[in-house]
Image (cartoon, rainbow, N blue to C red):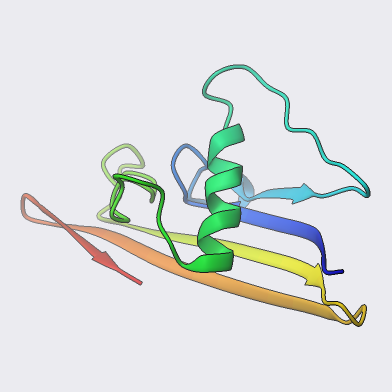
Length: 113
């Protein structure tokens, strides 16, 4: 059986955009429980797991509301990144990464994968 070990999130939803804001979640065997108040990022962690493993954005986001808002970050563009580290069925360590960019151009949001 494959086993998720770690995931890092940067620039997604309320997770900040600077390197110091990167969050690393370690998954424990046999169970990891996500606990926190409303707005703490529990759902975002699950959505990031789905996005990195399937490429599907959360319902209704179409990407541009999944990436941290550049206006909130006082930036013209935001680079978001999700990394996942897991062990495959043979126990071999695998790492995958997905990156996204959300930029403001005039009054329009431009989204790039």
